[in-house]
Amino acid sequence: MAFEFPLPDVGEGLTEADIVSWKVSPGDEVTVNQILVEIETAKSLVELPSPQAGTVGALLVEEGQTVEVGTPIIRFGGADDSGAEAAETMSAPHAETQAPASEGAVTTDDEGGATLVGYGAKAASSKRRPRKGAPATGGSGASATGGTAAGSAAEAPAAQSGAGAQSGAEAQPAAEAPTASAGVAPTGAKPLAKPPVRKLAKDLGIDLATVTATGSRGEVTRADVQAAADGSAAPAVSGATASASVDTGELEERIPFKGVTKMMAKAMVDSAFTMPHVTEFLDVDVTETMAFVRRLKASKVLGEDVRVSPLLIVAKAVAWAVGRNPRINSALEGDDIVVKKYVNLGIAAATPRGLIVPNIKNAHAMGLTQLAQGIQDLTALARSGKTPPADQTGGTITITNVGVFGVDAGTPIINPGEAAILAFGQVRKKPWVVDDEIVPREITTLSVSADHRVVDGEIISKFLADVGRGLEDPSVLLA
Image (cartoon, rainbow, N blue to C red; front, side):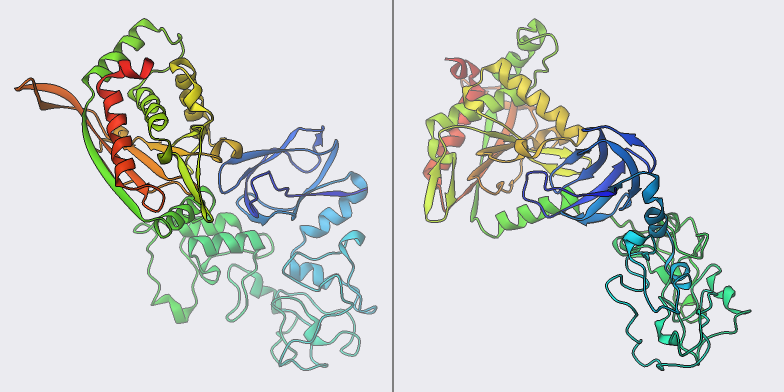
């Protein structure tokens, strides 16, 4: 018996996800908890395990397609369900020409005769509503794709034809009709393409009417759209638009605005236009911190495989400064300012899929070894794109390390749900005054953006000064 597995809510309250890659194919035997598919939510990549053992009957959505939670994505079933699977892969015009017009009924998906979603007749009705402006009866039943209507005009009205069908007055003779399916849809006809291909074309800004179709039934395929977007295939355009067509494939790049990138953008807009940001800057002599980092690396006291960097000491300094200025570690919730007595330290991470901010839980209670391991694990997961949703929620304060990009300072935007974010700039040797003498020292710039509704200038300044103090003399962090 067939069973359809819907896209589940993976525990982060999101409403949709993108299908990244299928790990199984129709006909494969799978076991319980075997990975079926990799999806991308607005926060991360997630692997979905199989809820049951059995045979994969059909993959109901394609890679690259965005689907809503609750939408069936895969069907389980053996040979008994092959008819339904075959029917789903049938093109719309082909499926419609096979419908027995004498009964005026459309077979349902369970009976193996469903047409492709978005084309043809609906399973819930016995016949299609006449097309607006089309005569109720009469005329030839030939379609633009070369199919012929079954039965006489009295048995199957011309308007009952599927997508791309012509009315009796517009229909071509049966011998000439097949020419419409070659390469490009006829003028005024809607190009044949599956919904995922249409969505891809929309995301890439490609007009399907200008794409040369290479599908076996004259449909536009995913590869056709990609080729048109890359400029590797000459788009087929009608004579009316050919003179106005300009190939900008090599001059522009279109990146789908979705997933992690879209969620990050929404969070930044919500933050920037909800919280009144105020930013303060401080130049800090981190010569002692850099010497401390070099000693930790050389001694390997934190572990053979533990990576030590200046970010580790900055993280420790932030947790220490929060303890001295707890109001900076708070958030506005309704009519209350909630001061968190724990530090879930967020580390902004740039990944191939966009910016995410996973956090280290209870960083305030960690020693250097635990904190270093936490940062290392967090970074590795972020780079792989598999940071779990739980690691991206519940943060209380964030660090963004802009120094790794060779930047001195910035005005970072606060992560929603928090009250402050600290930017750590690059460390450079600069002339510095020490005991009334100018000497070369290793200097960095710290900047803190804070929610001025929650904290005032005094709290921000004291917090920033304490972070600077901890970096100037890291021994205070270990006291």
